[in-house]
Length: 561
Image (cartoon, rainbow, N blue to C red; front, side, top):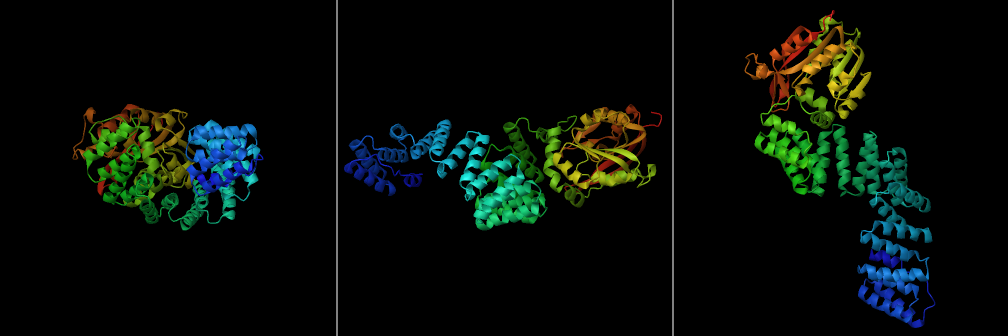
């Protein structure tokens, strides 16, 4: 700040005597050389020689402020303003004193007065904007920036600040225009490239965003947030090795950067590099022990390593930091406690995190084909391509099920808890309506006898008790309508022995998913009036390389029902 003081040294004079003017000039020289104590002595002498010498009072106020003697500095500057209220520099330094004393209202007032007196006071615009942002007066901050951009059209800095405000408001087009203007003024402005890339990424223009992030790293190779942003874009493009390289660079530049470590750790865990992922998560926790996500990600990685006890300790720490966190479902699963269903928050969080790589991981890695197998069960009951059914896809996810059953559907409705999964489903352009809601809540709001088919692939695995949902499915189906669904097999987990006891209708497994018994399914069908057309044993997926045994079931609401 001292260099700024020196650039603001006043040039007016109150007709000082030769002696006081000489003392003031001597003080100026000392101030320019950062010799504050000597400057104060000279300015005091000038003021004592001429108490109304405005320039000396302002110089003394500057020097005292640089020494953080704010009270005496304020007295000198106020005396100067009493003599001449139009001294913009005095208002400015009073504003900086107020800011440094955490008096936001005072700093805002003085910076604004400095601009009123001197409309081309560039420093005052910058500091007034910053003070208004700190005080959360965003609308006023934007007004100041608009004035600043008008006054200083060649300031790349003001263009960038205005772009940031517009971006925060969701006005992406005008934000982009501001960043592009800033770059036309300063093509090497790395942060402007980075902010432009942020907006492009938010609006789905991933190729352009990647290019802008790359330019930001060219002009400032140490700009960590640009490497992180580029990694995020590469991850969204499913260029995972490139994303990992970007995150690695961010961590190299700032090893204690929590977000960079979490991003890198997540991708490494997905590639099975668990030891290095654990290192990343532990580093993030060391940086910020209060970050629930870091403890949760570490718990997930430890669980993949088979360190169940340590994983549970991590999840319990998540709950301590965030008592409402749905990780309590995982703790219950790992601790052998049962429950009727996974919390909606747990399912939503799980699939929001999984949405970007859901299809490729599920199909290519886990060898998942349940939707196609369920659709094949329907073949004897409708001609493929007939497109004659109104279909409700429960837990539609990214639309894998929609793709499997679209051949039977004239009208396809999907419901899911995860907004990010629904975004993916929307891209398929198969659904006539998509709802982000809890399954049962959504079903309860639909008219009776609306659908010819209720389809649910690998969704009931997040529900234990199915009683209410089966009742709603029956209500929503037209007479003769079908319910096709899959569940994981509790009987297979029992070693192949059929389970008949009501106390073993379903079980929450350590995977966080539920398995159901055939006896429970048969009872649900009979209780709700369904005809069971068939149940098939299958392998629904691989779990750590081990096949998961499941049931595929097709039920029908009787035509007279």
